[in-house]
Image 1 (cartoon, rainbow, N blue to C red):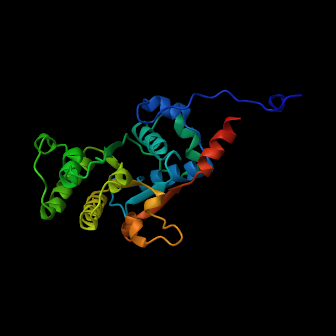
Image 2: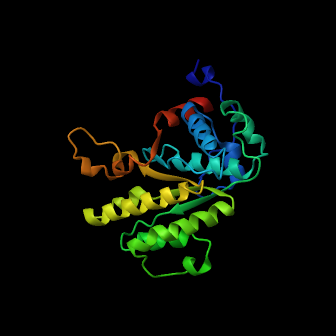
Image 3: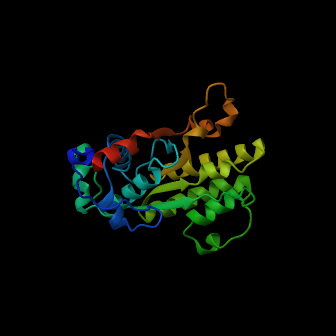
Length: 250
């Protein structure tokens, strides 16, 4: 008898690349695990009273490849399709009324890894719905950033954009050599996320756990995202998520 004779494989949709897959294919192929179900429930509940102000933005960390982007794309697909059958897997895990009554939009912002690209201008031009700001190539002075964010947040909320995800943050941090520049950019992230929160838009900054959890004997300065801990709530996705996905597939 072979080992395979003792295993039963259940047919399921193929795993997809969340960066290029359609929302429909992500909803069809998503595998609920203990961790992902908890994260989905937590974010959906945070948006149940949109556009009421958010208490705190989220800092979403985990090792590369654990599925952070996949779960956020899945949540975005659910929010945009409140009547989709995929909600049946999540509805038992959320309070009554947490499911949105109308479609809510999500905005994915990829932070450029090149530190020579001005972060303030990039964030403003990407988040803005104003064509003039979208096409601007001028650097945004630090003192002008916060007022611009408030205007952008109001426009996003009025357009039913409830979720803004900042990706590529750790990749950019890895290319920054000066601490002064790094601290300035961390303040920009903080201003953006808190400005969005005031208008009910939940900001989620995605980072690698190496930039949050110091290794034994490692200096605290090696974990720059920890500086946002006082203004953000944490969401963690561990490697156990991958183990449970493959276990479920057997």
